[in-house]
Length: 283
Image (cartoon, rainbow, N blue to C red; front, side, top):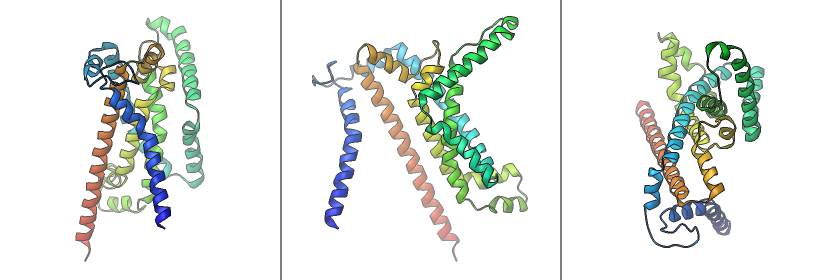
C-alpha cells in the first residue's frame, strides 16, 4: 500500500509539474530585463509598463473583456433557462435536445468558426443587397458578430453545468412553494435558483474562461474591425516574441486564478453555512 501511495503521489506531482512548469517559466521571464527567453539578465517591471502603454493591446483587452463579460452573462441566462426547459421535457425529447447541445462541444472549433462566418456573410450579403441599399447602411463582420459567436458556443457549457444540479433537485419543492402562495417567478428565485446556483456559477466560470481564451472562432467572426487578445498575441508571435506577451499572459493567469480562489472560498463558506443550518434544524 505504501509503494502504491508513493507512486501515485509521484505521478500526480509529475503531472502538475508538467502542467504548471511552463507557466512558472513564463511568469519568471515576464520580469526578465532581457528580451531573450533563454537568458536571465536581471529583474525588471518595464515590460508591464510598456504593456499598459501599448494602445493596440489595451484596445484588444477592452474588446476581449467586454465580449467575454456580455457573452457570459447572456449565455448564463439563456443556458440556465434552456437547462430548466430540457429538464421539464419528456425523456426522449430531453435526450434529443441534449444530443444537439453536445454537438458544438465535440465539433472542431475551425468548423464552427468557418460555418458561422459563412452564415454571417450570406445573411449580411442578402441584407446589404436589399434593405441595405434602401436604409443606407451595410452590415459587416465586427463586434456584433463576435459577440453572437461567443454566446453561441458558451451556451452548451452552461447547460451541461446546470443539468446535474437540476437532476439532484427535489421535483416537488417548486410545487410546495406554489402551494404556500408563491408565484412561479418567486418560487424560482427563492427556491430553485439557490439550489442550482453552484451549477450556474460553474457554468458561468467555464463560459467566461472559454470566451476569453477563444482564438479560432473569434478569428473567423471578428472581421477586420475588432481584435481580441488571443488574436493580438497570435499576430505578435508571428512577427517576434515580445516579453510583453509574457507580462500579458501573467496578468491573465493571476486574474483567473484569483477569481477561482474567490469562487471556491465562497462556495465552501456557503456549504458550511448550509450544514450548520441543517444541523440546527435536526431534533
